[in-house]
Each structure stands twice: as structure tokens, then as C-alpha cells.
Image (cartoon, rainbow, N blue to C red; front, side):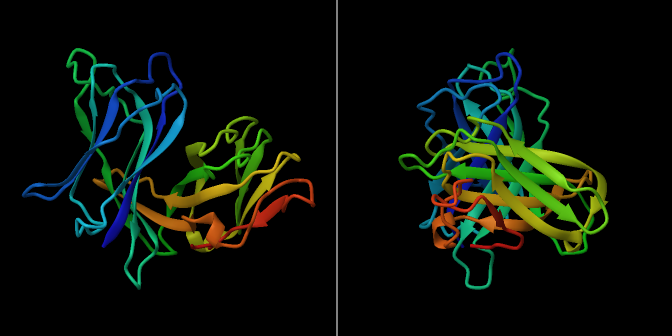
Length: 268
């Protein structure tokens, strides 16, 4: 069963892609909607920004599988998302703590209740956990800074994924991208060659400066490139509560934290 459902998205970095309207998440089966939740948007969703919302579903008896997953908008101020990722916090004894539910990338349509500006809602692909030997072509990174005073950093943060037989994949979060309290970064990266999770040798995160950083959540998934109604995903790093890991704060100043950490197969 699920305790919470998380709704992460990255808005396209194009003019007028942001919105003041409220996103809507709809999860259902073939008989009825199991969840229809409007996320209150107190702060404008800006072009190029990433956000992470959550909803408590502990009393709804929801499983992680939904054949129908849609994202909509309540309001006529059109919104153009680029990547959308829905996942849940599970309380099952033999399950990952955090499991993917649905995903869609490079969304081509704007959302709006004004039909002249866009669609009211759009479907997401179902996300399935797959095995270590399934071929992947993309990496999905989701990071959230802790929602506390001085947790953000104005320095560059680099995530490096090293493979056995191909060039490493590097995410560079430039200065200010993780500066705010609770700041979120969601990014999908296409790789030149396919890989299996068994090919991954290291996943490291490094802070390039003395401005201390405290993460709250850190997720990295391999994602396939099949044109089906679902996406295979495999967790490479699955940290839903950084504080529970004992990894601590990060900084290039050794008196303030570690400058680099190895996170491959870190599940919390």
C-alpha cells in the first residue's frame, strides 16, 4: 500500500510555458478514479523550473499500479510541462520504499481549461520496475534540497554515472539551481549507447565549492526507450530520506561535510 504519492515535473524552458493555474493528478482503474487531487499552486510555476508536490494517501488503500494515469490543469493560464514523474512511498515490508507509478517526457501539448490554448489533461505512461539486465537508454534524475535554513547551495553540484564499457554520464547543476529551501531539480538525459543497470559501476555526487548543501531526496533511475504504453525503469539510487542515511551535509570544505559521496545502490 502507498502512504504518499509524489508528483514531480519540469516545465519547459520556453516563453509562456509557466503557469499560475493548479496542476491536477488523476489515478484510476477501468471502473473509476481512485485519486483525483488538485495541487494548490501558491507560487507561480516558472519556465524551466522543477517542482515536487505530494499528497497523503495512507487512508485510501491504494496500490502502486494504476492503468489510468493523467495530469490536468484547473485554470485557463496554460502550462507546458516537459517531464512529468509520479511515484509513491510504499509501506510494504518486501518492497522498495519509493516506487515509480507513471512518467512522460518531452510533452508536446500545453494544458489549459481554455480549449483554444491546450488540452484539459494528458495521459502518462505507466512505470514498471524492471531487472538488472533490461536495456536502458535514458537516466532520470530527481533531487530535492532539504526544506531548512541554509540547506541550499549556490555552488555547482555534479552527479556522475560511471559504466563498465562506455563513457560516463554527467549531470551538472549549475550555481543557484539548488540554492533555495526545498529546491527541486528534475532532468531526463539521453545516453548515446544502451546500458543495463548491471553495467553501472559508480554513481557519485560532488559539490564544487564551500557553500554547504543538505539534500533531502535523491533519486536516479535508468529508463528504457520503448514506444509502448509503459516505461521500464530500474532504480540506481533511491533515497527518499537523506537524513536517515547518515550521509550528512556536503561541502568542499572538509570541516563542513563531504565533498564527494558514492551513492550507487543506495536505497533508503
